[in-house]
Image 1 (cartoon, rainbow, N blue to C red):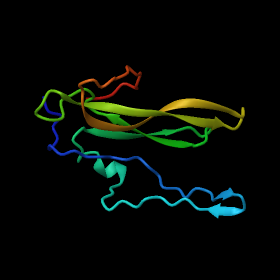
Image 2 (image 1 turned 180 degrees about the vertical axis):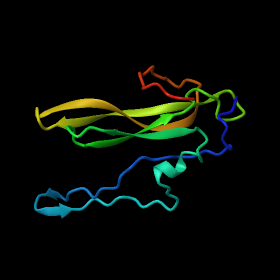
Image 3 (image 1 turned 90 degrees about the horizontal axis):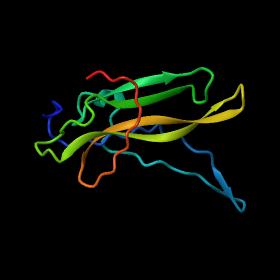
Length: 135
């Protein structure tokens, strides 16, 4: 079963381009520049244009830094994303450190940042608890 999307490999990158503070190295100042993409689309606008359907949900916690995190969840994780059953939509995530200033403690949270079409041959996939998703 297809995920209901047009066949095209779509890369969605979740990135908020924030200019990093200059790095000082032996008295020299180095400014880091971010790559500009020719084909860029705001994340929320790509929700209905991706080969693996996803939705964006905001996680807001006023007691945390950062206050807002945007999670990208697969709508139909594990479904076929091409005519070939060897390709499946999988959830991508990374662990991020957040700070709770009231206690001056950090905590590691999963940040779900993509849903991509991958070949499942030899692809190690972890079971990971995610919120209840609506298909």
